[in-house]
Length: 201
Picture 1 (cartoon, rainbow, N blue to C red):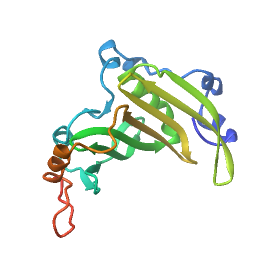
Picture 2: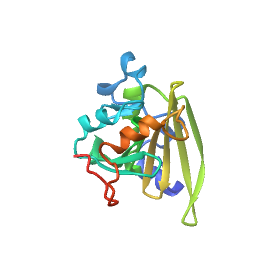
Picture 3: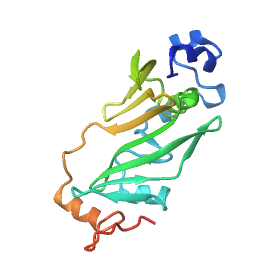
Picture 4: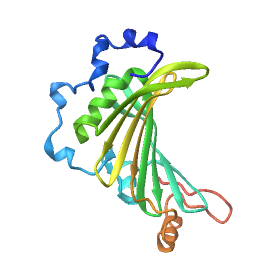
């Protein structure tokens, strides 16, 4: 959806569809069970543990900060239409998954929206405005999903050629509990005495 106003009609064959959220293809219409699920991506849900992430992505590349926050980057994942969730990153505070984020091409907008609709139903809010990127004004759209426990924000564009998706728990503590911090540093992504980061493989 994002991009300079002059580009919209080239990327969207039906420009008037901007006035309504793109409908998911009939083959992937949402079902009630998925709409009530906790937000997540590729089988890993917000609020889950490091073990859940390792089970889904045993080769995740994790890095730990001094306050026991892990950021784990996994391989790009398809979202449909030949587009991929890139720089797919899972964030854990202590042993709790608190955030997920990725970006994809602005040309993958319809597929990103269709996937989120299929998994979590229609968004709670759609906001349209404009953003300035590298000195140029671009039409911008922000979709927001909320379930009372967590939030999804799709922003298009965040770069002239990229949109972003961010999922976050609403009740994230400022820092992990001491016991959680010790647990995180005893497992993948923890820092050794020599300053090296242990692999999550």
